[in-house]
Image (tube, rainbow, N blue to C red; front, side, top):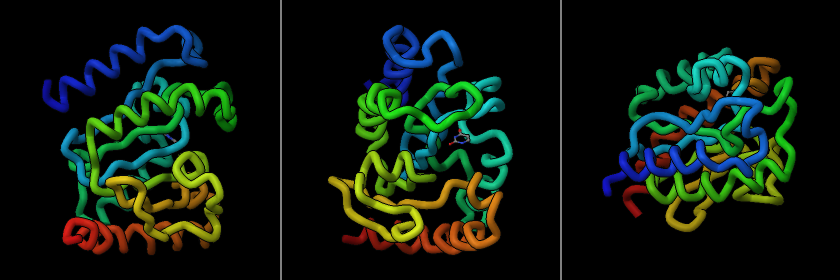
Length: 187
Ligand code: URA
């Protein structure tokens, strides 16, 4: 089975898992992009627009993500974008830890299939899955090795839309990604 087929199979399995929290209240937003992506972006959970279109990061945060990707000449189609919780929590509330726990085994399988060089987390929920003690205000932009991947925590684009300081930090960290990726591939 190739990667595309493996991802399709995983998606179908998730769709059929009636025990997943938020099943029945929102659509599954599995993720999209290149199955051969070198960078995997992991956000928090879909919002209203994402739920409607069943695609990750297509609302205001997504527009900013696209802009940041353009700055590093990396079109959306060349990366892979997903979320830690793959259904929209009501009123866009923060995901509960039980929701994160229920969805992460699927996320882990998605990571194993794509096997990206770099994982860039967007916001604290996906960061804390990999690094439980990390603090986004302190650790954003700092690369760490996690198993076979380089992990880079980034501010969530929604935070960058609210704060000029976080916007500047997100932009700075994005501009550093190509070098971190290159370095990761040469070790
Ligand atoms: N915010 C997220 O964390 N994920 C999305 O897909 C959209 C907004």
